[in-house]
Length: 195
Image (cartoon, rainbow, N blue to C red; front, side, top):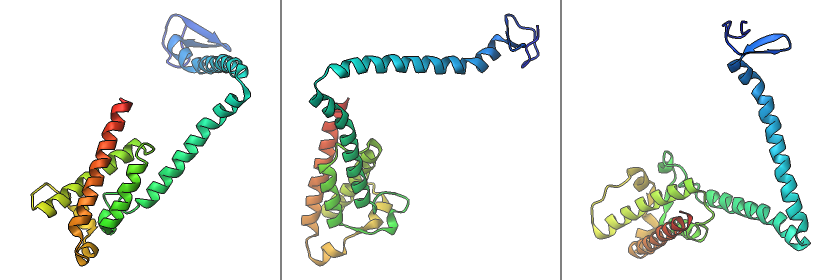
């Protein structure tokens, strides 16, 4: 018999509503329903199993379980949104030259990142690590007159005027470098725990 979809003689042929389908087309057309039924049943079994375990727990532990996950995610989302608002000047490398940033602002940002490094999303964590390692290279090259390969976009976004005006460039730069080193240390220790 001919398959209605591919018009070829194939064996075995399945007849559904007086329409013949080959094996491949019958799987493509009708496996969706089977998969949905299987998903529903597996979910039902798991929910039933969890419900029996959950019902045997004391009520205070039940309340703790219900509130534990939602409170942490809300807390982490709030912290991440605050961090993204505070770091809006350094958020994008393509438009970083448009936003001048002082060393005091960088010190405040890195202090906040040191405090909440464990909450940060991994992609932002890697970005901040890259950005602040470039800042560290720029500051070390300016203080110690060493040559490094520098990111010119990040260098152009820095505003040293306030620090040069008050003659505290070296002091603030060294403070920022130590905070960047602490940030790198915290990230490395945190990634060792994760792996």
